[in-house]
Amino acid sequence: MDRLIDGFGRRFRYLRLSVTEVCNFRCTYCLPDGYRKTAGPAFLGVDEIGALVSTFQRLGIEKVRLTGGEPTVRKDIGQIIARVAEVPGIAKVAMTTNGWNLHRHVADWRAAGLTNLNVSIDTLDRDGFTRLTGHDRLHQVVAGLDQALAIGVPTVKVNAVLLRDSLENGFAEFAEFVRRRPVAVRFIELMRTADNAAYFTDQHVSGERLKTWLGQEGWSPRPRASDDGPETEYEHPDFAGRIGLIAPYGAGFCDGCNRLRVTAQGLLRLCLFGQGGVNLRDLLTGEAEASNLLAARIAQALTGKASGHELARGQAGDTRNLAQFGG
Image (spheres, helix red, strand yellow):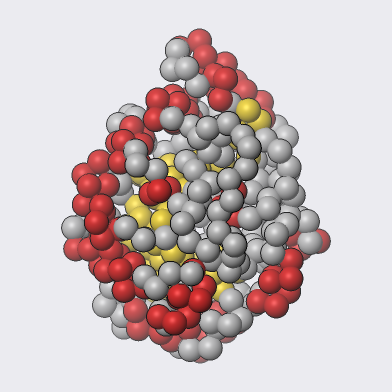
């Protein structure tokens, strides 16, 4: 069954599932004052996640990414990975993490079924990393990434938010980082949210700066896979890894949207920078009838998906910060 097609002909095979809003880092562009608990329902449990993913798979989803917050603050994250991986038809189980305990647990997560790993490393400068995240853990994070490569996690990528303060020398340093590592480093344009207006004004840099640098250094774009996110990746014959760009402010960014989002409380978000969401949680019982109703609710919700976000007009919807819905 393949029913996840919106009114603009876009087909959705990729689900980003937030499993928590909690994060233990204090990144300057997201949670500079740290996570602060707000009133609301508990986060989805393992059984609810299993029921959710099973129904989405029936509708054509093939790839699931576990996000947060920081998903690994959940003690049952290994169980969650295993539950998603055991759903027939889910070909890729991905996770995005800040890497704080990656070196201790990545082997267990791989054994549970993890196939794709994204690690957030915004700078390779130790002092800069500490200033950005509030933690002096760059060495441990990189060690965890290298361990993931060593044990054979099929796809390992690095996410780096493009910031004015870390721009100088940053591209060249990350290029050296991937010279012998088969890793894709994707620079992500800083996005405006409700809580970071002043920071955005001070730190936003256009992705065109990276494109210009890549062209000057002999990097060339590579084709996208059908379940890739919105990045454009570049390769170079002298480097084992790749460098990519996610540029949400670029023209046509939403034209090839292939992802849906579900929050940690079970709300379907049709756009990261939209408003509200469609409640799915009441139907996550695992029963056949509930699954059929859930599938119908999801398909109906897609009829209301907009053609794109309104970031260029300074409208971030009700997104306070990226930890809220998983980025």
